[in-house]
Length: 69
Image (cartoon, rainbow, N blue to C red; front, top):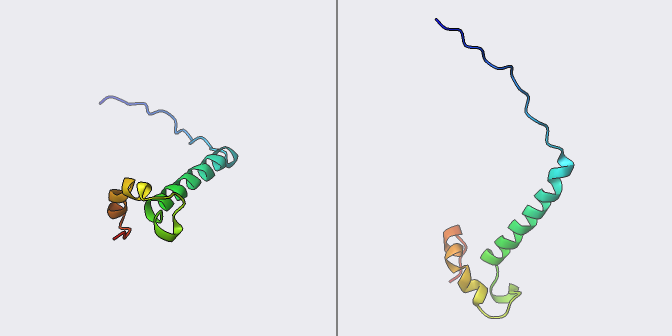
């Protein structure tokens, strides 16, 4: 039999919350903005005139289960 030397157990590196938090907030805001445009950008809640945004995200609305007809 051969002996196999395994490396010593390493500990995961700590990730400081102060470095991650701004990126998490930014990502969350982008996600909320995307959900608004896919889910609610039409009719009375519309921020942009016309149906351009609605038609652009139309298939995504159906894929995610948002009603639009």
